Amino acid sequence: AIVVVATPKDGWALEEGELRAACKMRLPAYMIPALIDIRRGPLPRNPNGKIDRKALGVEFASRFEPDAQRAGEQAAAHR
Image (cartoon, rainbow, N blue to C red; front, side, top):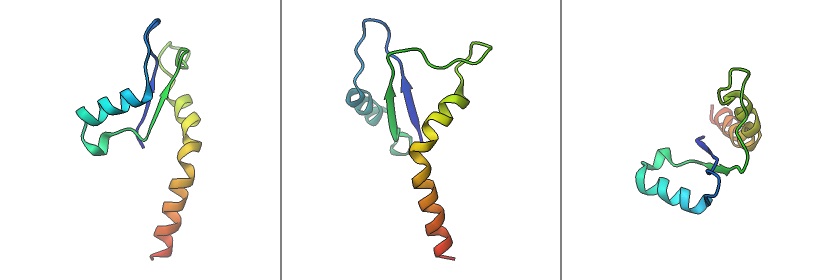
């Protein structure tokens, strides 16, 4: 699933609905994010100062696990 994690600049307002509408106008349907998370603070960083994608992945994995598990169960039932 595609997840967008956005952090607005100081003094800027960012709304999930507006961001989703902009994605729908500019992206093909298969690229529309399943989840948009707007954060007021900084993204997690690794010791090198880069965005820690693994930490973000762990954070959002639980939101999609039931869907993946259910899909696996359905595939096994059709065999």
